[in-house]
Image (cartoon, rainbow, N blue to C red; front, side, top):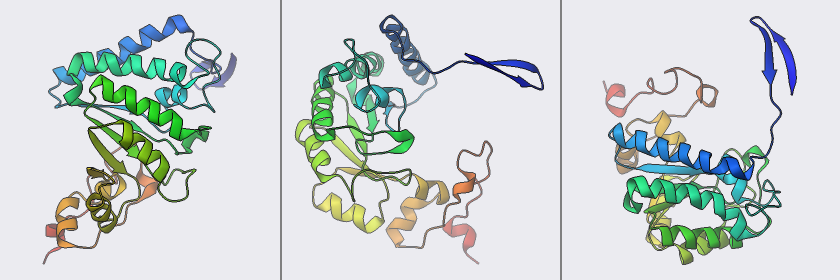
Length: 238
């Protein structure tokens, strides 16, 4: 650990370390508590975040999971902790109200996997067995993607092993979304940045109307700017 000076005095900075195996059940309980809190708050369901280099993604992918215990090495070992979390959340919500988000080829936070087809085929099978309602897959990302275009082999691996709703995500236009839905490449498509900048996005897509451009400088800005001030079609009307 190191210390740095700050206006309020000395601040302790802890160096990152791998979680000990005996700490993992406690982390699972934190996920369970979060699911319980969402239920008490009146949510309709929850989506587990296992993408973009966050904790579950770090366990899933081979470049970040360098453990030598029962939570690292083989695909089944790397799935062990994520599935503990999935099972805890499903225990609270039921599979029909639990989803999960993954980014098999996303490179954000320096992530990668030696064999994403094998990793995510195995994960999809386990999620299917757990009764999870949907898998949302970040197929392309402005934050970095190791595949050229959409990772069709990984998509096939997930769809072949997960038999509920597949949601495609990432850099979709309305036309590509319609085409891939018609081709059976997904059951749903989700939009992120276009929805931030277009509060009436579904209506705009139905009409074929122009979209507001988003301002990336306002992402994660800490206040309402860039989240509540984009115009709707009606507000632009004379």
